[in-house]
Length: 410
Image 1: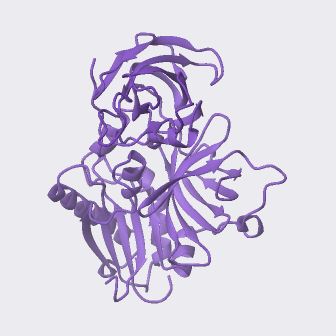
Image 2: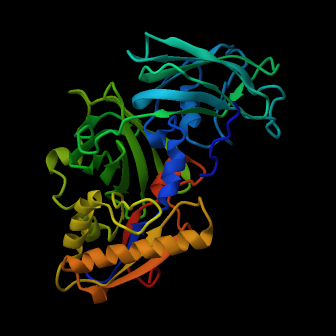
Image 3: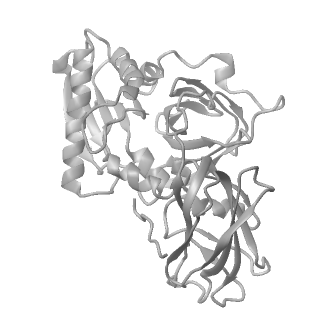
């Protein structure tokens, strides 16, 4: 069966607030491929060029993995860990195709797939062999009802190139149980390629530090989305998406528009340097703290019913912190601005983001924030903070931003 997966998926003064307002249908489309970082899948092992293997789970079929040296010969093995034990219906791949300016015949052709319920090193049972055309996608059905956690893809051959092999995406569809957002898995300390990270999870909300600054965000579907801010420079900031895997490793990416880079590492040891959070615990209200220091923050954790402006109950912790940060009496006037990713028609995204902004304004007003200080605005997809070409970037673009109003940002 041939499959095409989704490819594009306070100081004094006034503040501007941006609100997550993406169509929930986008989330449904993303769930169709469980093998993305945005859906909690991590790369456990890659036999060749593991850094590039991150491209296999980015949800972008125009960029992926390739061997970097002709002497790295096939077979090429990749092991992926799903967010939770999953009953699979289908697994597949998307090839690089006849890449312009690339090596002819380099697209992967023959890929063996196996699954394990016991671990990333053993217990694998063959699921079948995928034979994929040079320019296309292909998949095989899975009829075994046993829940599995790890998938192994082995590229045996390409379409004839002697030196290079390309593979763009791995895909999987199946039934996966919901992972609790409040199980505390993100409380801890880790080493990382950008220095130490410390996080404290309270319910679904997150606050913490990395080597050079602060982190604040929330957990949704078992996946953490956060904003990071350099403590020494207000202009150095961005967003990040993390997953804690079965080995307790922190795996993710960071965005500082427009770049995307791997971010994460193993649990901290006694030798791992400490962050500022070890000296001063994260603030009780990180939203208020961010507004007081930088004057702006990206927020995650406000959720709506499918294709609707009805707020879900799980949004309440973030909304309450926001109301507290804005103050229930005298305080700054703010704009409530909705942001979406770029999936869907522009007019629809704008309208939905405005209606959802209206819903948040109504909630804040009902909980003590003076209504006259709140102006709802819809921005749709016009102000991304991450790459809409990736599934994790789209997830980060559906967000809340709180920013101090200025002449440059009226």
